[in-house]
Image 1 (tube, rainbow, N blue to C red):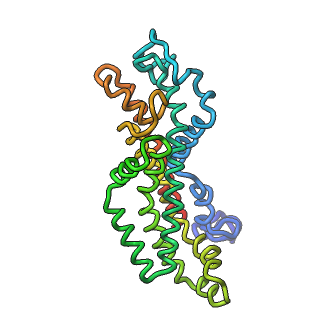
Image 2 (cartoon, one colour; image 1 turned 180 degrees about the horizontal axis):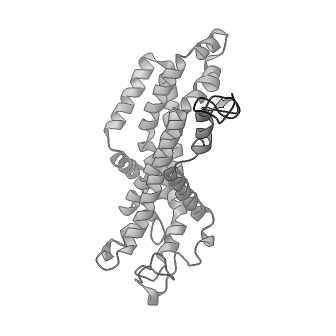
Image 3 (spheres, rainbow, N blue to C red; image 1 turned 180 degrees about the vertical axis):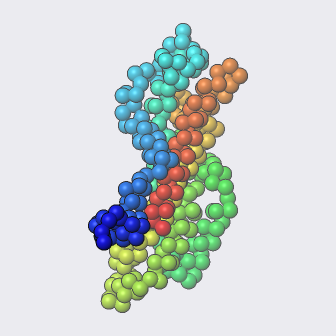
Length: 298
């Protein structure tokens, strides 16, 4: 007897949980959530993309001169004409933040590049060689890790002298130990895998196997650390700029902008708060992207 579909079947004679030959629960999740990027990660990428655009095409976002000011417009609060207000000599703070992004971001890229290259090289050599070489390199890394990164960067700056490039190199040297430890751990793990042993067993030369098999398969956590260190480098460079070791006035560098406004905290809060908020936003965005990369590579 035929009739209305029951709980055990549908009009097509298939079980109640089946649609077009596939379980319904296998169809619906594909529509609901797979492939969607979390909102926080989207916001993080938008923040980083915006700051990168500031560095590449600052003229698109502001028409004000970041160096020259109008004395009659000094210390104006944020408004429609000046989004971040003006400073003590009448310069548009938003224009200085936008134009200053190129100094902070380029310095952070140099710092991450120095730490990534030197640290990965040390980690690769230590993890691949093992024995006495591994122990010697990692003891040096342990000593560097025991020293706070900012203090180590200040020590390097004393040797190299102040300046934007020297600050970036100093911050990069301070991050070498972290990259070396992560790279070494991954190299040791990959070095013991079957495909690496098979590559050696098939007659592969030691440098070639390291370059073609060990290094590419060890870079996942290192890349995630590089994203995290990018935000940390911006924070460190801004801190050193605040202390006076970075760019010279009137260069619009983020740390220097915060330092210039500290004498006006009681009356002009925007001089330090808004540039500081930009630094915090970029650092948090880099950290969020780093966590996302780490999960994808895990």
